Structures are given as structure tokens and as C-alpha cells.
Image (cartoon, rainbow over all chains, first blue to last red):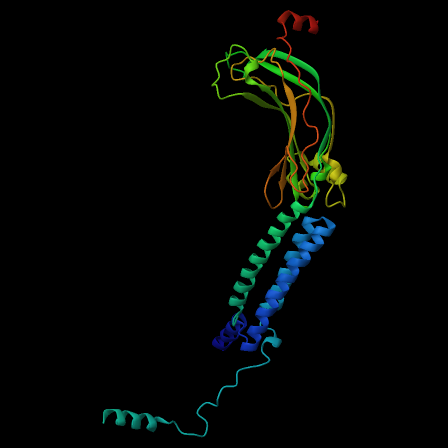
Length: 105
Length: 232
């Protein structure tokens, strides 16, 4: 029971996402950070307020972290489809054996 | 980007890049902001040379010049969003040949000593001002709601006492000739390079207009009995 719980906690902390999700996360992170930097500069320059610029940039960064870091469901929309384990076909050990035999001969 | 830890590292890594680039742009924005500092009036109002000691226990006696002055300057164009604070100082300058009976190296051709200075903070840097809590409250109130306050760059001083009484390595400063006062400033930005007053125009930054007083001579040493008479 304790181990199951530990496993769940590990999953949440790990926060693994699928391959498409990884591509999306990287795109979101780069675009959001760049845009918040540009907005921070422009707003700060036009209003001549450097504190505002810093807060916009930091706010944008925190938002980016919130969007990108947790394993949100939209990062796991394309799970990898593994082949069935074992399945109906028996283990194909004989093939290996044959190969080995051939090599030895 | 497969796990939370990797996403944190990647996002933070790119954040540092963005922060650096934005800072570089902020520093560069200084160069597209015109500067036109001007000094309308800079003149001496009262000159005095007295004898004194460099510190309480010193047996050495030196001459000290007390130069009172009047200043009217408009440095408001130096206050932009990237200005943290402005350091303004006034120096007295004189050629070293005019001091008789001194033994200075021959490569020393001029003397310069600061007689007065001040720090003008931008509203974004008021918390850095080294003043008491009541004065700080007053300062904050004076620029409430304003991200920058160029009016702080307007300096008007009348018959201002110098902060520093100046002397010379030789200990003699009385009757020095051809002394001038010069106003200097140093712009300290939030990000970017420090800049000082210029003697020539660079791009949109104009040289400091005025900023140099007329030549004057320091008076003779104040006689002791004269001082007593003045007190009496």
C-alpha cells in the first residue's frame, strides 16, 4: 500500500509527458518567454517605467513555468502505442537458436 | 523536456537568455534618448581661506579654502527609465604653476578638488537613498505615481556652503590664482555603462552647456586678529 502511494508521488514529481507533448512544451516555453520579454521592453520604454518592465518580465516567466512544468493533460494527448506484451505469439527463442547453430557450423 | 525537472531547467535557462537580451536592449535605449544638460549659473559668492588641522590630533597646520557658490542647473534630460541615480559634483580647478613655493612633480600641471556633491535618486531607486525614514517618505511622496521625475534634475542653490574645505598637498592654498569651478555629473543607470559629463556632442547626447565658472583668485589667509574682530 505504502509502495503504491510512493509510486504515485513519484509519477507526479516526475511529470513525464509524451513526445508530442515535449515538442509542444518547448515551443510554448520559448515563445512565451520571448513574447513576455518583448512586451516588458516595449511597455517599459513607452511608459518609461523600469520597475513595470521587470514585473512584466517576471510575471511572464512565472506564467510560463505554470504552463510548461506540470504534466498537464494536453501534453499527454499522443501516448506512445507500445506493441502488446507477449501477445498470442509464443516467444521466438528458437530463431535465435537456429542462428547460433548456423554460426557455429 | 520529458520530465518536470528537465522542463524547469530548460525554461529557466531560456529565461536567463531573455533577461540578458532585454537588459541589453534597455542599456541600448539610452543611446536613442537625447540628453541636453545645461548649467545656467555657476559662480562663487564668498571666498575664504583659513588655517586648520587635517584632523583633531594633528600637529600639522594647513590652509583650507571655503568656497561658497551659487548654482542653477537643469539636468532633467538625464533622467530616463534607465537612470538609477545621478551623482553631481563641483570641483575647483587651478593650474599648478600658480602655487608658489611648492615642490610637486613636474608632470602635475593642474589641480582639481571636489568642493560639493550630491546624489539625486530616480523614483525607481528611492529605496537606495541614504536618508532617514521621514526624509525618505517625503522623497517618495514628491514623486508619487511618477515612474521618472525629471524635475529632480533642476538644481537651484544660492550661496551654498561647500561640503568639503579644500587644501593642497603643499598645505598652501591662499592667494591661488586662476581658480575655476566646474560642474560634473555621473549618470548611473540600472543596466548599462556609467557616463560622465561630456565636452563634445556624441550622437543625441549633447555636451554639458556651461558648467564652468569665471576665473577667480583665492583671498589671502584670514588673519587671526581679524577673526577675533569678526567674532566680537
